Image (cartoon, rainbow, N blue to C red; front, side, top):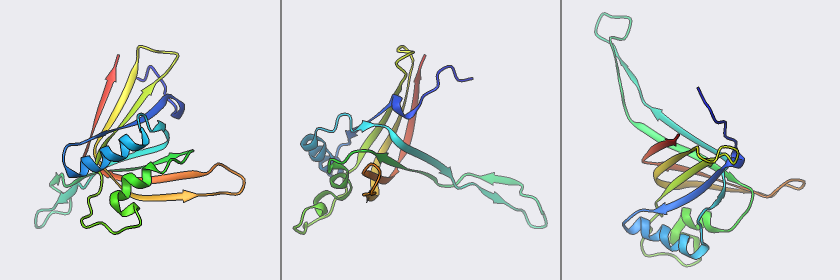
Length: 163
């Protein structure tokens, strides 16, 4: 049973870079745009899917076994402000006007922190490891806020709750 209810206003998004060429590209963007934290967690979705496949023996109508397959981690992030850094995190050198000799997509860890001000000793965090952005969109509505949305894929997630 949940003892604390969180909303989007209780969350923040931070990035941490990984070691290696892809992490170095993300570190350059994080350092240039001072992305700690990126901002308030607005419209974050996180999906983890497991390709479960049934195994049918010859002559059997019902599956005799379920076998786990590939696990996929993906999601989206909406934000209500633009700083140019998300596009740079997605494209790396390709965001510049000059062509790059080699293309390395930046990779980073995404940390979602949830803290309710009414219950300061309780928090929850989800860390998405090995994130690469795979889509970016920009909406400029006439009568609403400018919105930016990115889609990502990741290697795995870690969930931690503190009592």
